[in-house]
Image (cartoon, rainbow, N blue to C red; front, top):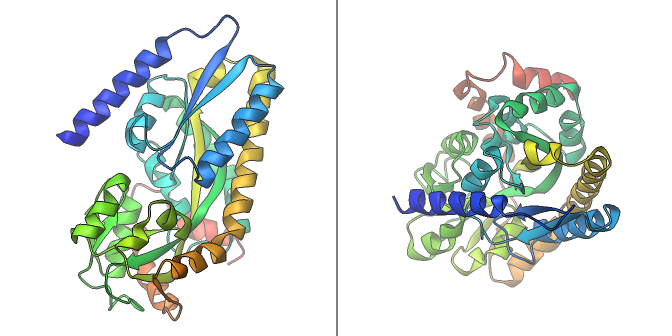
Length: 327
């Protein structure tokens, strides 16, 4: 009930704010996300804000709301679908509640590198899904690399699925992550991202999974001892906005926003991609034990059955993507 109340409050606040008029001939868009002001997402949003305001001559303003100020991702996405002037970033697993095929973009071990993710994200296959989003008032602007997701635990080294059997692992509220944890042998434990720190410190959960920069951003190293380089997901994230808000812009503003968003996504991808090793080294400096000798093949083999849990996907979706990638 607590989360429902917070989500409703955030939704109402968003709609009220969306209804407030901007200055004459000026559009105000709000970029909302759950990361801290120093996280790469907020830095990318700042770049988009500066570039867009310059390009549009001040007619399009972007306000930044980091640290879940407008609510958790699911509540913000709901505000967006209802027409609030919001830009945000969400994982494919969240978008999949509207267009199920999207969650395949974070299928564990499906992509070997970011170039493969980019190839599929820019393909006619995914472009077709973007058209399906329109009926939910969602406009996809660009994909970016949120990071390589790894497993981390409070007090146990994990090198194979057998080692993680029974561990209570935090999952975000998306089916693909629930199936990931099941394939690892863990016990899926849904929790809002903001509560993971306390859940780890209090032993409510035994483990979580996230990119190393996110572990640093939230200081999870203070309660988690082991960091396993499972590299199980190349975490594609999508910058989206209200389609009605996008359509309210004139043609030049739309083109500028699309171009500048793509530039911001490319920058975030570059920064995230080159920062992985440094982030892992930082976790070591904060006292975490980094486990390198993970049996990734065993985890990958266990993940092969995940697609069977998604009958709503297009037939042979995983096989078609592998074919696109030449495998």
